Every structure is written in structure tokens, then in C-alpha cells.
Image (cartoon, rainbow, N blue to C red):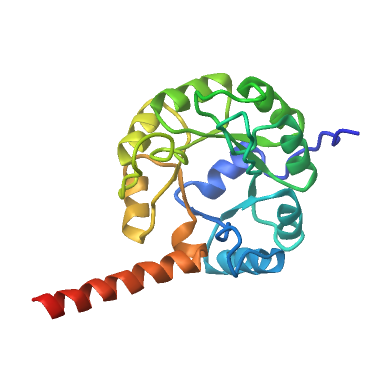
Length: 240
């Protein structure tokens, strides 16, 4: 039986005020890494809230339910799937939407790129709203974002900018944030905002809120940054 529609605790006016100018923490450890355990993700989420996160982004139905039971802050829920015949990964199926809603998501994010998909974007949007949740479009470019906004998505994220084609850039896509904001979208800046200064730049560019993941919740990656920096310094001293 499909999940019954529920009235979200965070309607858009309330969520808009809560997240405006604030931080969302994406609690997604490295797949298969030492921190990739449900209880660790729950504690990671709790620590993020203590540190000032105004909302959380959580992957997986089971983990979302566990985090939901431990906190009252808004949760953006996603499901990642590697489908053999489709390139989209983020919440590609209607059943994913229903499961996330039943597990307590306030916002459900889906891949909003122009790529082929097993379930049309408008169907996913309808399912999200039917379940009483808010809809977020994970976009890769201005065209993605504007199309999703015109369709009726509540939030447009720059989540997939730089991850769809070509080599991934080192810098966040502030130009996309600015373009979407100028077009009137409610913009969630996400993707390579790995320092407080970069997050602040996103707000200055017009972002409504900023999501940070890797720099806060992927310890292996953060450690590698420091280790590589020290290694480069040592190498420079040896050759200099």
C-alpha cells in the first residue's frame, strides 16, 4: 500500500524563514568507508545540529527514518540508485518519493537534469506534493533550474553543476547561483562549498541557503586534503 499523504511540519513559508541565509549539512559518508554506518550518520546529524545546521540532507530511507527520530530540524531526503539503463541517480523512482515521505522527509530532492529517466520529472514532482512534502530540484545548469522552477519545484539546488559532463571544476558554480537567483528562483547553493568563505560568497551571489557535505562529513576526504598539502610542502622543501 502506498504511503498516505501527510501534512509536512515545515510548510514553505516556515522553511523559507528558517533556512534563509543558513546552513544545511549533508550527512553522507563515503560509500563503504569506516563512517558508512547508520548509527554514525545519526550522530553526525546530531553533531551538525549542535554546531548550527538549520537542516540536514540525508540519503537512504532507513537512515532518514533513524535521523528523523533523533531531531526535529527539517530533513531533505534523497535515495541514490545506480540504474543499469538510466544515468540519473538521485531519487529516480516514484516509489523512492513515497518511501522517503513515509520515513519523515520534509523536503524530497530529485535529479532535475535533462537526461533520460525511468520516471518523468513532472510525475516525481506530483508525487512529492501529493505526500505533503516540499520538492527540491537538483540541477546541473540554468536550463535545468528554470524548467524545474516553472514546473513548480519549491527549491532549486545547484547540486549537480560540474558533475554531469567534463572534468569537475575545483570552484563552486557561483555564476549559476546568481543566474538562478536573478530569475527569481529560491536557490540552494550546493557543490564544492568547502570553506566558510565560499559559503558566504554563495549568499552574496543570491543563494537562499547553502548545503555543505564533503567538507563537514567525509573525514577521509578532508584528511586527504591536509595530508596532500603537507606532502606538497615537504616535496617543495626537498626540491627547492
